[in-house]
Length: 79
Image (cartoon, rainbow, N blue to C red; front, side, top):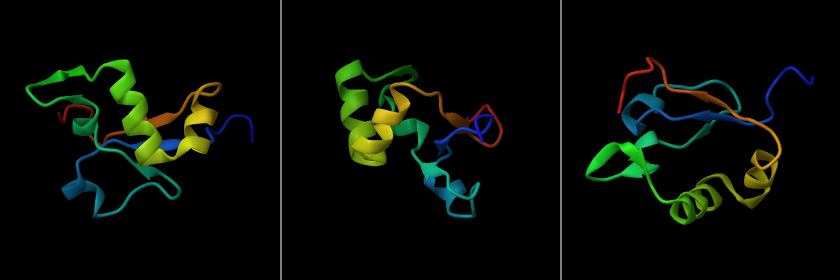
C-alpha cells in the first residue's frame, strides 16, 4: 500500500519500548541520535549514518534514502 510507510521507527527510550510497540516498528531511541550533553542537538551526519546503519541495517537505510519513515515517540515530549 503506497499510503503506508515501509519503515516505522519507535524512538522511545528502552524502558518504554519494552512494554510494546507498533507491529513491525524498529526500535531506535532518540537519545542515541542526539549529543550526550545536549539532547536537543543531533549527532553529526557521519555519526548518524553510522548509528542508522548499525541499528536499522544497511537495507533499511537504503529505503530511507528515497522514502520517509514514520517515527513514533509516544508523547512527543520525551528527550
